[in-house]
Image (cartoon, helix red, strand yellow):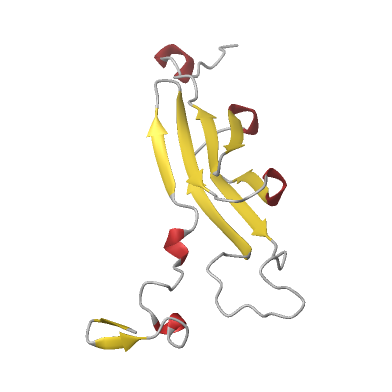
Length: 137
């Protein structure tokens, strides 16, 4: 038995009532974005996710990372039952506005629970190439 903020907690009886045990969606897919001279790197935390569980798509300027993690019931044996679970199972996705990029300018790598998506920066358009000239006949 222990006390926190004037409320008494017993580990097994009040486990789900404990204020620090609730799972927040903001804890999933934490992201850092880094800019380099020639690219952007999107680093997404995806602990214990396998490569085959991840799908990355590009549509209308949005890069979407989708993950489907299936429950393998490894906490449950033939005679016991799960009384508390903090690991996340299910589907989650997150989208990032990446602008006008092409699929061939994007690469991804999953290593040690970190998904790194590299987006090459488009070549800057020279001022001369921006101008459109009209042929005179």
